[in-house]
Image 1 (cartoon, rainbow, N blue to C red):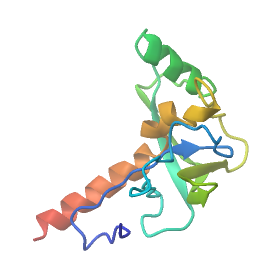
Image 2 (image 1 turned 180 degrees about the horizontal axis):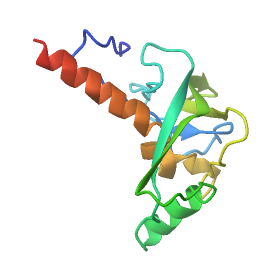
Image 3 (image 1 turned 135 degrees about the vertical axis):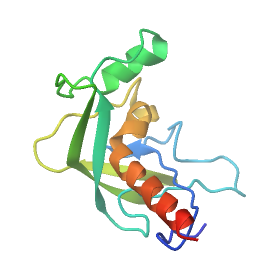
Image 4 (image 1 turned 60 degrees about the vertical axis):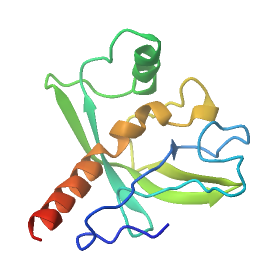
Length: 153
């Protein structure tokens, strides 16, 4: 799979499984058991590869009261809760795709004193319950660039 080449490329696949620790051998994400397949990791902070800072965006109200909602709330329990509907956190983590120990994942490293990300329900899930929000600011930027590239055709 080729790296995304924005802004010239109209579409590209962005996929990742976030981890903030080494990937356990029995991880549910980042690996495949099919030798003919590989797991894709695209760093939303740096589509052409390398390391980059993510911009996190989270809703400030708790997720719905359910099994998954409760787990998602636990995963982001360290977040500040301002009185706005959404909170944006520019550059709290550095992200880079890693191919180590047979796992292809987005490794996230704190940049200074930031909120804690928690692997829920356990380390085999990595940051799966926070993946949608951890780089949401970067993903919004990707969509904006794709819209602009498509509109200019």
